[in-house]
Length: 354
Image (cartoon, rainbow, N blue to C red):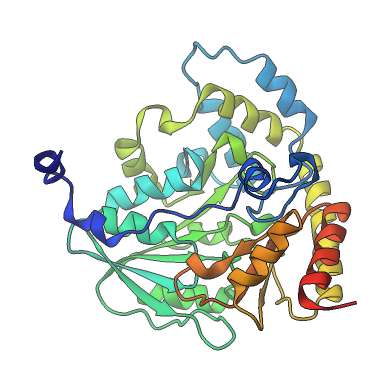
């Protein structure tokens, strides 16, 4: 094995594996808890799930057939208010970003990442042989608008994961207009906010806005993402993308069905926003959020608080694995009213609150 391992790319030694939210089965086995009694608020999933039309569509899928994504791209274009030739798809937002970085990053290039944020940007940059440049967000978690020279890609997440904060339109425009690189704006959680920067793609030749069906549409298990890009980037994307863009026949069927029932998505988003407001009223330390999760800093180390909640059957996210977040921050997905009540009760016990 030793001589074969010498073929590995040296850049991999710089990476830590991506840390996902803890799973129900894992926690049930570790703590001896019944799976049905565990509340999962650590992965930013939509607790209401997708439209009933999605289940009907998946049931009629023929898995022996390759996907035919053309109709899905048309439907996504209609939803996004963009020409179909500007819309590209991938296996989740991760798949979209993988192809985007394949277009622009060569070994030795540099990409800008504002921390704390989604850790996959770093993985994409390093595996391309490029150099991530980290800029810590400001005192109120704002994004610094002065972009260092020589950035091939600038990654921005808004609403930001894990903090939930939003970039202003003025700040976004400043960054896009003052860099020679391509700005990738990750709007995975946009539907939970009042912000939508998709129309700006028509104004700039270096702005790509990524979206996903995982969050608001409740299709996390389908792995279906998309982006609106300038036509020249979309054209190159189609050249570099994997066969069928990496999507599957079930994910195409699910995406089409979800887009045919946008009202279901909007109802679930409104329910989540109401519960998000209720949680903030109950725990004043939660920061304002434009996403389907809330972020707070803890007096005790976050790992200790998270462990105590796990023992009570409540899964939240310790943000220690997010570069720049430190070891006193938690992220809590907004669940159903019943799930949120369980969290509030457990959090009160753990933190000594009434």
